[in-house]
Every structure is written in C-alpha cells, then in structure tokens.
Image (cartoon, rainbow, N blue to C red; front, side, top):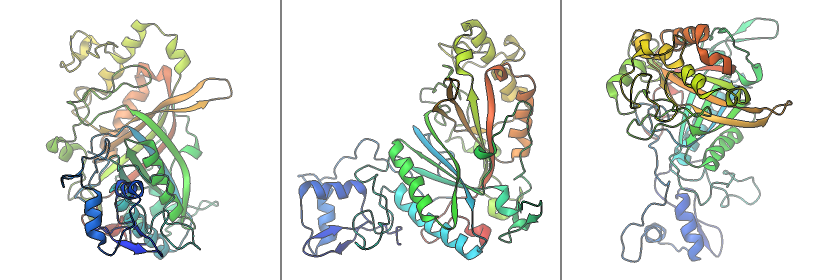
Length: 437
C-alpha cells in the first residue's frame, strides 16, 4: 500500500487506462463523467481534467476544502469544528509489537490519503481483480469534506490487566506512560457502561460529510483486522462547541447555545497555556500533543421537555434565546456570576469560578434511537482536550458532579481517556513513531 503519494499517477489495466489512487476523488469522477481514455501523457491529462475550458483551475466543490494532515500538532483539535463525527475506540488484539507498529504505519498512510480526498492504496476499483480492494469505495466522488483524523493512546496500551488481575506490559511501553494519562476516577452520578468506555487506541474522525467520516473509520478498521478491532464507537452531528468564536455558536439538544467561551483555534497563547503539552510536562514523545477526555452524556430529554423555560434557564444561567448570561443583554457579555443561580452550569464551569482553568471542547450531539421504554437515547458526546487532565477535567468535573443543577437532566454513561501525540510532520513519519521509536 502506498497511499502517501502526493502526485497523480496512472496504471494500465488493459485496453483502457484508468486513474490510480493517487488522484483526488473529484478528479476520478471528472474522468468517468467525460468518458476519457487516458493515454501515456497521464499527468498532463490529469491537469486538463481539473481545468475549465479557459485553462483556469476549476472551482472547488462545496465542502472540498482539505485540512492539512502534516503539522506540529495533530489536526482535529484546534481545527475549526466540522459538522459530523465518527469516533472509534480500538482494542489491540495482538501482542506482537512489530505487528502493531506496522498497523500504525499503514494507518498513517491511509489517513494522509483520505484527509487529502484520495483513495486508500490502489483504490476501490483499480487493484488486482483477484484481491479485495484497498479502499471500500463509498467515498468515491466525494470531496475531502475537511476530514481530520486524530489518534490517541489509552492507558491500557501501556499496561493492561489480565482476567486474573495481573498487570501486563504487552508492548514495552509502561515506562513511557505519561503521569497525566491517569485512569479517570469514577465521578459522582456516573453510570458507566464498560462497553462504551476505555480502549487502547482511539481515532476521532471529523468531517462535513458523514459518509466521509464513516468511510475513514471503516477503512482504518479494515486495515487493522487481525491486529486491532473496534471496542465501541459513536456517531455525532450538530457540533455543540465551536473553536471559531466569530461563527454562530451552536446549540445542544437542550436548545441552549454551547461553547460561547470555548478556546479559539486561533488563540495560540490560550492553546499553549491550556491545550498543548509543553517540554517538561511529561515524556518528550507527548510534547506538542494533548490529552483527550471522551464522555458519552445521555440527556433525559423527555424530562427536560416538560421543564419550564424559567427552570431551564436557571439550570444554565443564561437565557435560551440570545444566550446572554443572567443580568446581561448579549451572548458574549462578560457574565456576572453572582447574578446566576448558585448551582447553574455556566456559573460552576466558568474559568472565573475555577482559578482560570480552561479546556478545549469539541462536543457533538447524538441520537441512537430509543431505549426499551420508548425514550430517546440522545445527548452529548463530550470531547475535551487539555494540557494535563489532572489539572483540568478532573477538578472541573468534580465540581460539576457535586452541585450542577444540570445533573438532574443528564447522566454520564461512557468514559475514556487518551494521550494524543504531536502531529506527523512530513511524509514517511507515522502515528506513534516517537512513542515506539
């Protein structure tokens, strides 16, 4: 598999030559629609296929924008939040370190291709007829859709428990586990489902098209077959936090604006202070990375929908229409925390109530049908990135779990913690290289 190719190439498959997987998916469709047989001058023809009649570059299709895969930090953290999510936590089934490393290398190549809007490997329809395709194909014709893929390593990858309670260092990583990668404590009111919690490795796929995000997770799971398998996953929609404060603040399923004072993806000072692990914070392989907490929070929707508007606003400490804090007129007016009810969510969670503590949130709403009683299985899939979970999420969640008025209407049912390393800086490097190297 060679999905990292940056330049388009072509392969001969008989009387007609077809584009290879190095091309963007939009270029492939352009060819197919024109019914053009591509000859030996493939590269030039590729260029022609993406030009209009006047030789000018064709305009990008809506949602075609690409999020750079390579960089000092992983994309999908400070990146402007996309519309859709497919999050997956994997259990590693092999004890062969070399097999795990190979999977991470293959994943990296596939991720670089998919975030660039290209097929994986030899593609969905151009490989050997006798073998399964390298790409599942459901994203053919779709643009990159701002796909970002973010990887994290869970505590159990470094040391795991056997059925008889023995701790095992499967891959020789125990000494490299960051102190900040704690086993999250059980917070008051938690009702955690082990089948929706934990995991050795996570992949967060965010995109503006749900099929592109699902395609990415599906192909990574296919590549991992025999080495790792999905432990649990979550689809999400309707981002509930924004890293672009100049855009309209999204609303959660309770109808309230969510993330008014989230850290902006362009605020480099705040990101350095609160999100990115710095030299000296822990093991060097985590410098430039971040710690991810994922929590599946179910909302008691039917109870909430029977609650008065006054009670709903008292729970949050903001009005529902404008999103203004109590005593203020506009959403982004500085809140007067003392004007809010003592147990209101915003008052308890605000940085001024927590010695300036901040986390970067990328939450998404979810609905997974109904439960056996006909109630919506819906809520918030909470994703938070921070420089040190022990100093950020843990004290904040302890405070909220103790006295947040919102607790009457929500319950945390899934929980996981991952160390997300720095970004892959150039082709040839791979996810986890600094950890395993």
